[in-house]
Amino acid sequence: MIGIIDYQAGNLTSVARALDYLGFKWIISSDPEVLFSCERIVFPGVGAAGSAMKSLQRLELDVFLKERFQEGIPLLGICLGTQIILEESMEDEGTKTLGLIPGRVYRFPDPLLYGEERLKVPHMGWNKVSWVKDHPVIANLDPEFEYYFVHSYYPVIESKLVLGMTFYGINFSSALAYKNLIAFQFHPEKSGRPGLEILKNFGKWVP
Amino acid sequence: MLSKRIVVCLDVRDGKTTKGVKFKDNIEVGDPVEMAEKYYHEGADEIVFYDITASAEHRSIMIDVVRRTAERIFIPFSVGGGIRNVEDMREVLLAGAEKVSVNTAAVLNPKIIYDGAKAFGSQCIVLGMDVKRVERSSKIPSGYEVWIKGGREPMGIDAVAWAKEAENLGAGEIVLNSIDADGTKEGYELTITQMMAEAVKIPVVASGGGGHPEHLYDVLTKAKADAALIASMVHFGMYTIKEIKEYLAKRGVKVRLKW
Image (cartoon, rainbow over all chains, first blue to last red; front, side, top):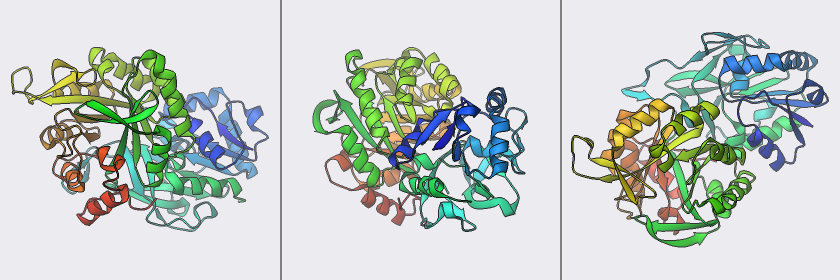
Protein backbone atom coordinates (compact mmCIF):
# COMPACT_ATOMS: atom_id res chain seq x y z
CA MET A 1 0.00 0.00 0.00
CA ILE A 2 1.24 3.46 -0.96
CA GLY A 3 0.16 6.26 1.36
CA ILE A 4 -0.55 9.64 -0.20
CA ILE A 5 -0.28 12.39 2.39
CA ASP A 6 -3.22 14.78 2.37
CA TYR A 7 -2.41 18.05 4.09
CA GLN A 8 -4.90 20.23 2.22
CA ALA A 9 -2.28 21.36 -0.29
CA GLY A 10 -3.91 20.92 -3.64
CA ASN A 11 -5.62 18.18 -5.53
CA LEU A 12 -4.11 14.76 -4.82
CA THR A 13 -6.37 12.72 -7.04
CA SER A 14 -4.06 12.95 -10.06
CA VAL A 15 -1.30 11.12 -8.17
CA ALA A 16 -3.83 8.51 -7.06
CA ARG A 17 -5.13 8.04 -10.62
CA ALA A 18 -1.62 7.55 -11.96
CA LEU A 19 -0.94 4.90 -9.27
CA ASP A 20 -4.26 3.24 -10.17
CA TYR A 21 -3.27 3.13 -13.81
CA LEU A 22 -0.01 1.44 -12.84
CA GLY A 23 -1.84 -1.09 -10.70
CA PHE A 24 -0.61 0.04 -7.29
CA LYS A 25 -2.82 0.10 -4.23
CA TRP A 26 -2.97 3.49 -2.52
CA ILE A 27 -4.70 5.39 0.23
CA ILE A 28 -5.12 9.14 0.61
CA SER A 29 -5.19 10.25 4.23
CA SER A 30 -4.29 13.04 6.62
CA ASP A 31 -4.30 10.71 9.60
CA PRO A 32 -0.85 9.45 10.73
CA GLU A 33 -2.45 6.34 12.24
CA VAL A 34 -4.03 5.40 8.91
CA LEU A 35 -0.80 6.09 7.01
CA PHE A 36 1.35 4.26 9.54
CA SER A 37 0.93 0.83 7.93
CA CYS A 38 1.87 2.03 4.40
CA GLU A 39 5.10 0.56 3.00
CA ARG A 40 5.83 3.71 1.02
CA ILE A 41 4.76 7.32 1.21
CA VAL A 42 4.08 9.93 -1.48
CA PHE A 43 4.30 13.51 -0.28
CA PRO A 44 2.79 15.73 -3.00
CA GLY A 45 1.45 19.26 -2.76
CA VAL A 46 0.64 22.43 -4.62
CA GLY A 47 0.35 25.81 -2.97
CA ALA A 48 2.24 27.94 -0.48
CA ALA A 49 4.83 26.68 2.00
CA GLY A 50 3.55 28.65 4.99
CA SER A 51 0.00 27.33 5.06
CA ALA A 52 1.20 23.84 4.12
CA MET A 53 3.57 23.72 7.13
CA LYS A 54 0.77 24.86 9.45
CA SER A 55 -1.48 22.05 8.20
CA LEU A 56 1.30 19.47 8.58
CA GLN A 57 1.91 20.54 12.17
CA ARG A 58 -1.77 20.65 13.07
CA LEU A 59 -2.26 17.12 11.68
CA GLU A 60 1.00 15.90 13.33
CA LEU A 61 2.19 14.81 9.92
CA ASP A 62 5.50 16.64 10.42
CA VAL A 63 6.51 14.18 13.14
CA PHE A 64 5.12 11.28 11.11
CA LEU A 65 7.24 12.15 8.07
CA LYS A 66 10.44 12.56 10.12
CA GLU A 67 9.91 9.18 11.79
CA ARG A 68 9.17 7.37 8.53
CA PHE A 69 12.26 8.93 6.96
CA GLN A 70 14.44 7.73 9.84
CA GLU A 71 12.95 4.24 9.65
CA GLY A 72 13.97 3.93 6.01
CA ILE A 73 10.47 3.84 4.45
CA PRO A 74 10.68 4.91 0.77
CA LEU A 75 9.50 8.52 0.49
CA LEU A 76 8.63 10.38 -2.70
CA GLY A 77 8.33 14.17 -2.67
CA ILE A 78 6.58 16.05 -5.49
CA CYS A 79 6.61 19.80 -6.15
CA LEU A 80 5.73 21.59 -2.88
CA GLY A 81 6.42 18.31 -1.07
CA THR A 82 9.99 18.48 -2.37
CA GLN A 83 10.43 22.00 -1.05
CA ILE A 84 8.96 21.23 2.37
CA ILE A 85 11.40 18.40 3.17
CA LEU A 86 14.21 21.00 3.13
CA GLU A 87 15.01 23.30 6.06
CA GLU A 88 13.62 26.64 5.03
CA SER A 89 11.59 28.31 2.29
CA MET A 90 11.74 31.99 1.40
CA GLU A 91 8.03 31.80 0.62
CA ASP A 92 5.56 33.56 2.95
CA GLU A 93 8.33 35.81 4.36
CA GLY A 94 10.47 32.85 5.38
CA THR A 95 8.99 29.56 6.53
CA LYS A 96 10.84 26.99 8.61
CA THR A 97 10.13 23.65 6.96
CA LEU A 98 10.64 19.97 7.90
CA GLY A 99 14.41 19.82 7.56
CA LEU A 100 14.63 16.12 6.64
CA ILE A 101 17.64 17.08 4.55
CA PRO A 102 19.68 20.30 4.38
CA GLY A 103 18.65 22.90 1.84
CA ARG A 104 16.63 26.03 1.20
CA VAL A 105 14.00 27.18 -1.23
CA TYR A 106 14.31 30.45 -3.19
CA ARG A 107 12.05 32.36 -5.55
CA PHE A 108 13.13 32.71 -9.19
CA PRO A 109 14.86 36.09 -9.57
CA ASP A 110 12.81 39.03 -10.89
CA PRO A 111 13.44 39.73 -13.69
CA LEU A 112 14.43 36.25 -14.81
CA LEU A 113 16.31 36.73 -18.06
CA TYR A 114 17.34 34.40 -20.86
CA GLY A 115 19.43 36.52 -23.21
CA GLU A 116 17.17 39.41 -24.14
CA GLU A 117 14.03 37.53 -23.26
CA ARG A 118 12.25 38.05 -19.95
CA LEU A 119 11.03 34.66 -18.75
CA LYS A 120 7.64 34.18 -17.17
CA VAL A 121 7.25 33.04 -13.58
CA PRO A 122 5.84 30.54 -12.67
CA HIS A 123 7.99 28.17 -14.67
CA MET A 124 5.06 26.33 -16.23
CA GLY A 125 5.25 23.64 -18.89
CA TRP A 126 7.63 20.97 -20.17
CA ASN A 127 11.36 21.03 -19.55
CA LYS A 128 14.25 18.60 -19.54
CA VAL A 129 16.16 17.19 -16.57
CA SER A 130 19.88 16.50 -16.81
CA TRP A 131 20.40 13.51 -14.54
CA VAL A 132 23.73 13.87 -12.75
CA LYS A 133 23.83 10.36 -11.31
CA ASP A 134 22.15 6.97 -11.49
CA HIS A 135 19.28 5.95 -9.28
CA PRO A 136 16.86 2.97 -9.51
CA VAL A 137 13.84 5.31 -9.65
CA ILE A 138 15.10 7.09 -12.78
CA ALA A 139 16.60 4.02 -14.47
CA ASN A 140 16.40 3.80 -18.28
CA LEU A 141 14.90 7.24 -18.92
CA ASP A 142 15.84 8.79 -22.24
CA PRO A 143 17.75 12.05 -21.57
CA GLU A 144 15.56 13.75 -24.19
CA PHE A 145 12.38 13.15 -22.15
CA GLU A 146 10.69 16.21 -20.68
CA TYR A 147 8.68 16.67 -17.50
CA TYR A 148 5.84 18.96 -16.47
CA PHE A 149 6.69 21.80 -14.09
CA VAL A 150 4.55 24.44 -12.35
CA HIS A 151 6.43 26.45 -9.72
CA SER A 152 7.79 29.87 -8.75
CA TYR A 153 10.26 28.64 -6.09
CA TYR A 154 13.12 26.18 -6.50
CA PRO A 155 15.32 24.09 -4.18
CA VAL A 156 18.96 24.89 -3.43
CA ILE A 157 20.77 21.86 -1.99
CA GLU A 158 24.26 20.46 -1.49
CA SER A 159 25.66 19.05 -4.71
CA LYS A 160 25.98 15.53 -3.26
CA LEU A 161 22.17 15.42 -2.86
CA VAL A 162 21.42 16.56 -6.41
CA LEU A 163 19.99 13.92 -8.74
CA GLY A 164 18.99 16.16 -11.66
CA MET A 165 19.27 19.74 -12.87
CA THR A 166 16.96 21.85 -15.03
CA PHE A 167 17.63 25.11 -16.86
CA TYR A 168 15.12 27.96 -16.84
CA GLY A 169 17.12 31.18 -17.01
CA ILE A 170 19.15 29.69 -14.15
CA ASN A 171 20.21 26.13 -13.45
CA PHE A 172 18.33 24.65 -10.50
CA SER A 173 18.06 21.27 -8.78
CA SER A 174 14.90 19.66 -10.11
CA ALA A 175 15.49 16.24 -8.53
CA LEU A 176 17.17 15.16 -5.34
CA ALA A 177 17.91 11.86 -3.67
CA TYR A 178 19.23 10.91 -0.25
CA LYS A 179 18.98 7.45 1.33
CA ASN A 180 15.29 6.37 1.24
CA LEU A 181 14.13 9.76 0.01
CA ILE A 182 13.66 10.86 -3.59
CA ALA A 183 12.00 14.09 -4.64
CA PHE A 184 11.14 15.96 -7.83
CA GLN A 185 10.24 19.57 -8.45
CA PHE A 186 8.20 18.50 -11.49
CA HIS A 187 5.00 16.45 -11.51
CA PRO A 188 5.65 12.82 -12.54
CA GLU A 189 1.89 12.20 -12.46
CA LYS A 190 1.42 14.77 -15.25
CA SER A 191 4.57 14.05 -17.26
CA GLY A 192 3.18 11.38 -19.54
CA ARG A 193 4.96 8.05 -20.01
CA PRO A 194 8.32 9.14 -18.55
CA GLY A 195 6.56 10.34 -15.39
CA LEU A 196 4.61 7.09 -15.08
CA GLU A 197 7.92 5.22 -15.44
CA ILE A 198 9.26 7.14 -12.43
CA LEU A 199 6.17 6.32 -10.35
CA LYS A 200 6.37 2.66 -11.38
CA ASN A 201 10.04 2.52 -10.38
CA PHE A 202 9.28 4.19 -7.05
CA GLY A 203 6.56 1.62 -6.37
CA LYS A 204 9.16 -1.18 -6.61
CA TRP A 205 12.17 0.63 -5.16
CA VAL A 206 13.98 -0.99 -2.25
CA PRO A 207 16.40 1.62 -0.85
CA MET B 1 14.90 25.30 -21.45
CA LEU B 2 11.09 25.41 -21.36
CA SER B 3 9.36 24.04 -24.46
CA LYS B 4 6.70 25.89 -26.41
CA ARG B 5 3.49 23.93 -25.90
CA ILE B 6 1.23 22.46 -28.57
CA VAL B 7 -2.25 22.30 -27.11
CA VAL B 8 -4.97 20.26 -28.79
CA CYS B 9 -8.46 21.66 -28.45
CA LEU B 10 -11.57 19.50 -28.39
CA ASP B 11 -14.92 21.27 -28.62
CA VAL B 12 -17.44 19.05 -26.90
CA ARG B 13 -21.19 19.19 -27.45
CA ASP B 14 -23.45 16.72 -25.62
CA GLY B 15 -20.46 14.46 -24.96
CA LYS B 16 -19.19 14.43 -28.58
CA THR B 17 -16.29 16.30 -30.15
CA THR B 18 -17.34 18.80 -32.81
CA LYS B 19 -15.58 21.34 -34.99
CA GLY B 20 -17.03 24.54 -36.41
CA VAL B 21 -15.92 27.35 -38.68
CA LYS B 22 -16.05 30.88 -37.22
CA PHE B 23 -17.98 29.45 -34.26
CA LYS B 24 -20.75 28.10 -36.51
CA ASP B 25 -21.66 25.01 -38.57
CA ASN B 26 -20.39 22.38 -36.14
CA ILE B 27 -19.84 18.83 -37.33
CA GLU B 28 -19.19 15.81 -35.12
CA VAL B 29 -15.66 14.42 -35.26
CA GLY B 30 -15.53 11.77 -32.53
CA ASP B 31 -15.51 10.69 -28.91
CA PRO B 32 -13.66 13.24 -26.73
CA VAL B 33 -12.13 10.72 -24.31
CA GLU B 34 -10.79 8.51 -27.09
CA MET B 35 -9.50 11.54 -28.99
CA ALA B 36 -7.80 12.98 -25.90
CA GLU B 37 -6.12 9.63 -25.30
CA LYS B 38 -4.99 9.39 -28.93
CA TYR B 39 -3.48 12.90 -28.87
CA TYR B 40 -1.83 12.15 -25.51
CA HIS B 41 -0.04 9.18 -27.08
CA GLU B 42 0.79 11.20 -30.20
CA GLY B 43 2.62 13.89 -28.22
CA ALA B 44 0.15 16.66 -27.34
CA ASP B 45 1.60 18.77 -24.52
CA GLU B 46 -1.80 19.63 -23.19
CA ILE B 47 -5.48 19.04 -24.01
CA VAL B 48 -8.29 21.58 -23.76
CA PHE B 49 -11.96 20.64 -23.64
CA TYR B 50 -14.48 23.34 -24.44
CA ASP B 51 -18.00 22.42 -23.51
CA ILE B 52 -19.81 24.37 -26.20
CA THR B 53 -23.34 23.55 -25.16
CA ALA B 54 -22.77 23.92 -21.45
CA SER B 55 -26.44 23.96 -20.59
CA ALA B 56 -27.06 23.00 -16.99
CA GLU B 57 -28.65 19.65 -17.84
CA HIS B 58 -25.59 18.58 -19.79
CA ARG B 59 -22.98 19.41 -17.14
CA SER B 60 -22.94 15.87 -15.81
CA ILE B 61 -22.03 14.55 -19.28
CA MET B 62 -18.97 16.83 -19.35
CA ILE B 63 -17.94 15.88 -15.82
CA ASP B 64 -18.09 12.24 -16.88
CA VAL B 65 -15.86 13.02 -19.90
CA VAL B 66 -13.37 14.72 -17.57
CA ARG B 67 -13.37 11.83 -15.12
CA ARG B 68 -12.84 9.19 -17.80
CA THR B 69 -10.12 11.25 -19.46
CA ALA B 70 -8.26 11.68 -16.18
CA GLU B 71 -8.08 7.91 -15.79
CA ARG B 72 -6.36 7.54 -19.13
CA ILE B 73 -4.14 10.52 -19.83
CA PHE B 74 -1.28 11.78 -17.67
CA ILE B 75 -0.58 15.23 -19.05
CA PRO B 76 -2.34 18.43 -18.00
CA PHE B 77 -5.76 19.12 -19.44
CA SER B 78 -8.18 21.96 -18.92
CA VAL B 79 -11.90 22.41 -19.18
CA GLY B 80 -13.84 25.49 -20.22
CA GLY B 81 -17.39 26.35 -21.13
CA GLY B 82 -20.25 26.87 -18.78
CA ILE B 83 -18.13 27.48 -15.68
CA ARG B 84 -20.18 29.97 -13.67
CA ASN B 85 -18.84 29.87 -10.12
CA VAL B 86 -16.27 28.40 -7.75
CA GLU B 87 -18.40 25.29 -7.22
CA ASP B 88 -18.36 24.55 -10.97
CA MET B 89 -14.58 24.96 -10.89
CA ARG B 90 -14.22 22.62 -7.94
CA GLU B 91 -16.31 19.94 -9.64
CA VAL B 92 -14.15 20.01 -12.79
CA LEU B 93 -10.84 20.07 -10.88
CA LEU B 94 -11.88 17.21 -8.59
CA ALA B 95 -12.93 15.19 -11.64
CA GLY B 96 -9.28 15.38 -12.70
CA ALA B 97 -8.70 18.52 -14.79
CA GLU B 98 -5.49 20.43 -14.11
CA LYS B 99 -6.96 23.80 -15.03
CA VAL B 100 -10.32 25.39 -15.50
CA SER B 101 -11.04 28.10 -18.01
CA VAL B 102 -13.54 30.93 -17.60
CA ASN B 103 -14.71 33.22 -20.37
CA THR B 104 -18.22 34.73 -20.41
CA ALA B 105 -18.69 34.29 -16.67
CA ALA B 106 -15.47 36.21 -15.97
CA VAL B 107 -16.47 39.13 -18.21
CA LEU B 108 -19.85 39.37 -16.48
CA ASN B 109 -18.38 38.84 -13.01
CA PRO B 110 -14.57 39.33 -12.88
CA LYS B 111 -14.51 38.35 -9.21
CA ILE B 112 -14.83 34.70 -10.25
CA ILE B 113 -11.16 34.88 -11.29
CA TYR B 114 -10.09 36.18 -7.90
CA ASP B 115 -12.25 33.65 -6.03
CA GLY B 116 -11.01 30.76 -8.16
CA ALA B 117 -7.35 31.73 -7.78
CA LYS B 118 -7.75 32.08 -4.04
CA ALA B 119 -9.47 28.71 -3.70
CA PHE B 120 -7.32 26.62 -6.06
CA GLY B 121 -4.23 28.71 -6.95
CA SER B 122 -3.59 30.89 -10.00
CA GLN B 123 -2.01 27.97 -11.89
CA CYS B 124 -5.50 26.42 -12.12
CA ILE B 125 -7.32 29.47 -13.46
CA VAL B 126 -7.26 30.19 -17.18
CA LEU B 127 -8.95 33.18 -18.75
CA GLY B 128 -10.41 32.33 -22.14
CA MET B 129 -11.10 35.33 -24.36
CA ASP B 130 -12.88 35.62 -27.70
CA VAL B 131 -11.80 38.75 -29.53
CA LYS B 132 -12.72 40.41 -32.80
CA ARG B 133 -10.92 43.11 -34.75
CA VAL B 134 -12.63 46.54 -34.68
CA GLU B 135 -11.76 50.16 -35.43
CA ARG B 136 -9.32 51.55 -32.89
CA SER B 137 -11.09 53.95 -30.54
CA SER B 138 -10.56 55.57 -27.14
CA LYS B 139 -12.72 52.81 -25.67
CA ILE B 140 -10.89 50.04 -27.55
CA PRO B 141 -7.33 51.30 -28.06
CA SER B 142 -5.90 47.90 -29.05
CA GLY B 143 -8.42 47.56 -31.89
CA TYR B 144 -9.60 44.22 -30.53
CA GLU B 145 -12.89 43.86 -28.71
CA VAL B 146 -13.96 41.18 -26.24
CA TRP B 147 -17.02 39.15 -27.22
CA ILE B 148 -18.93 36.72 -24.99
CA LYS B 149 -21.35 33.80 -25.27
CA GLY B 150 -19.26 31.93 -27.79
CA GLY B 151 -18.70 34.96 -30.02
CA ARG B 152 -22.33 36.06 -30.12
CA GLU B 153 -22.27 39.25 -28.06
CA PRO B 154 -19.83 42.20 -28.21
CA MET B 155 -18.98 43.76 -24.85
CA GLY B 156 -17.35 47.07 -25.78
CA ILE B 157 -14.28 46.05 -23.74
CA ASP B 158 -10.68 46.31 -24.92
CA ALA B 159 -8.97 42.89 -25.15
CA VAL B 160 -5.59 43.97 -23.77
CA ALA B 161 -7.10 45.97 -20.90
CA TRP B 162 -9.25 42.98 -19.97
CA ALA B 163 -6.25 40.62 -20.05
CA LYS B 164 -4.32 42.89 -17.69
CA GLU B 165 -7.24 43.15 -15.32
CA ALA B 166 -7.64 39.35 -15.31
CA GLU B 167 -3.94 38.94 -14.57
CA ASN B 168 -4.23 41.29 -11.61
CA LEU B 169 -7.22 39.33 -10.35
CA GLY B 170 -5.14 36.13 -10.34
CA ALA B 171 -5.56 34.45 -13.72
CA GLY B 172 -2.62 32.12 -14.37
CA GLU B 173 -2.83 31.92 -18.14
CA ILE B 174 -4.72 33.43 -21.08
CA VAL B 175 -6.15 31.54 -24.02
CA LEU B 176 -6.69 34.12 -26.73
CA ASN B 177 -9.20 33.08 -29.39
CA SER B 178 -9.55 35.17 -32.50
CA ILE B 179 -13.11 35.00 -33.81
CA ASP B 180 -11.93 36.35 -37.18
CA ALA B 181 -9.33 33.60 -37.59
CA ASP B 182 -11.19 30.70 -35.94
CA GLY B 183 -11.55 27.71 -38.24
CA THR B 184 -10.15 29.55 -41.29
CA LYS B 185 -6.80 27.64 -41.27
CA GLU B 186 -5.22 30.83 -42.61
CA GLY B 187 -3.00 31.55 -39.62
CA TYR B 188 -3.26 32.95 -36.11
CA GLU B 189 -3.98 36.62 -35.41
CA LEU B 190 -0.38 37.70 -34.86
CA THR B 191 -1.05 41.35 -34.03
CA ILE B 192 -3.26 40.88 -30.98
CA THR B 193 -1.29 37.82 -29.83
CA GLN B 194 1.94 39.79 -29.71
CA MET B 195 0.26 42.79 -28.06
CA MET B 196 -1.13 40.52 -25.38
CA ALA B 197 2.06 38.48 -24.87
CA GLU B 198 3.96 41.72 -24.28
CA ALA B 199 1.28 43.25 -22.06
CA VAL B 200 0.95 40.46 -19.47
CA LYS B 201 3.45 38.37 -17.49
CA ILE B 202 1.38 35.19 -17.56
CA PRO B 203 1.55 32.70 -20.46
CA VAL B 204 -0.52 33.44 -23.56
CA VAL B 205 -1.92 30.56 -25.61
CA ALA B 206 -2.79 31.58 -29.17
CA SER B 207 -6.00 30.11 -30.55
CA GLY B 208 -7.88 30.23 -33.84
CA GLY B 209 -6.60 29.96 -37.39
CA GLY B 210 -3.87 27.31 -37.19
CA GLY B 211 -3.82 25.40 -40.49
CA HIS B 212 -0.16 24.88 -41.35
CA PRO B 213 2.93 24.27 -39.13
CA GLU B 214 4.27 27.60 -40.39
CA HIS B 215 1.34 29.34 -38.68
CA LEU B 216 2.50 27.87 -35.38
CA TYR B 217 6.05 28.95 -36.09
CA ASP B 218 4.87 32.53 -36.69
CA VAL B 219 2.74 32.79 -33.59
CA LEU B 220 5.30 31.12 -31.28
CA THR B 221 8.22 33.23 -32.50
CA LYS B 222 7.12 36.53 -34.07
CA ALA B 223 4.02 36.95 -31.90
CA LYS B 224 5.77 35.52 -28.78
CA ALA B 225 2.97 33.16 -27.74
CA ASP B 226 3.94 30.57 -25.11
CA ALA B 227 1.71 27.92 -26.64
CA ALA B 228 -0.45 27.37 -29.68
CA LEU B 229 -3.83 25.72 -29.79
CA ILE B 230 -4.66 23.43 -32.68
CA ALA B 231 -7.85 21.61 -33.69
CA SER B 232 -8.78 21.15 -37.39
CA MET B 233 -5.14 20.58 -38.35
CA VAL B 234 -5.03 17.32 -36.44
CA HIS B 235 -8.73 16.39 -36.21
CA PHE B 236 -9.01 15.97 -39.96
CA GLY B 237 -5.72 14.13 -40.34
CA MET B 238 -3.86 16.82 -42.28
CA TYR B 239 -0.92 16.73 -39.89
CA THR B 240 0.20 14.69 -36.94
CA ILE B 241 1.45 16.41 -33.79
CA LYS B 242 4.83 14.82 -34.45
CA GLU B 243 5.03 16.37 -37.93
CA ILE B 244 4.16 19.79 -36.56
CA LYS B 245 6.72 19.52 -33.77
CA GLU B 246 9.46 18.26 -36.06
CA TYR B 247 8.80 21.19 -38.40
CA LEU B 248 9.05 23.64 -35.49
CA ALA B 249 12.21 22.01 -34.12
CA LYS B 250 13.84 22.20 -37.54
CA ARG B 251 13.19 25.93 -37.55
CA GLY B 252 14.76 26.34 -34.11
CA VAL B 253 11.68 26.37 -31.87
CA LYS B 254 12.19 24.42 -28.64
CA VAL B 255 9.42 21.79 -28.43
CA ARG B 256 9.02 18.46 -26.64
CA LEU B 257 10.10 15.84 -29.18
CA LYS B 258 10.25 12.67 -27.05
CA TRP B 259 7.44 11.30 -24.98
